[in-house]
Image 1 (tube, rainbow, N blue to C red):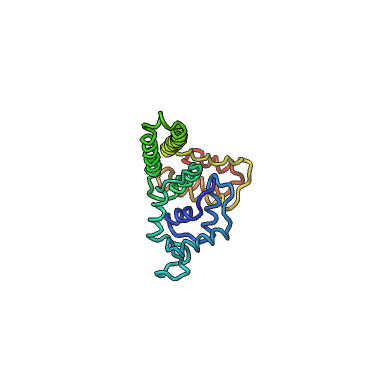
Image 2: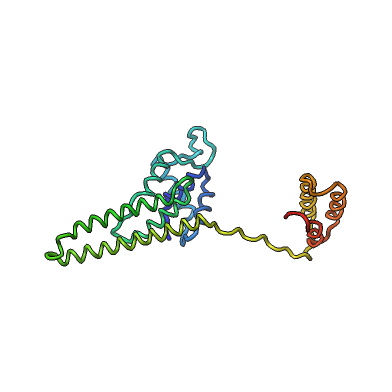
Length: 242
């Protein structure tokens, strides 16, 4: 999938100011991107956006801003308008609609469902126009009717694709992906001073929260400071919350 660099940059900046290298890294990390833009492409896009007044850079001294890029009010309006602008139906609209949906997911406060429905309403209205155009032509212009019918089937396929995308987005929002389980550390691995320090700090937290008596704290602190393996530390913490 190829996403518009211009609007992806505006979407990232809508969440807060960023420097050029940070923007390049976040663009490269986007899911589904086959050929992420290189640093030169990002730099060129940022220059064009600044030229068009859609962002400002701290280096330019605008309002005393610190180094980095900041989206302007015009940039926010341009991004919101682009997200809801119907795609060019002369070519396959799926790629452009996918790009708009993926950009919308990056913009804080944007109702992605509303963006999808705005495009769906536009396509339904187009189908209604073609239906009206087809009426009365069946007996006189068979070729025209067939062409209109082909266009209506194409629009219907895009609408059904949008419905499927909207359903997937809603299910994903209702069921966020599970957090990965923490890695299991072999009990035989030797501990470091930093590991023992973290263990003693956690013991002091448990004491402050009332889970350990003063005598238990002293006993376990001594055991933690002399622990040689992660298995030793695990035994000390076995009856305490992770």
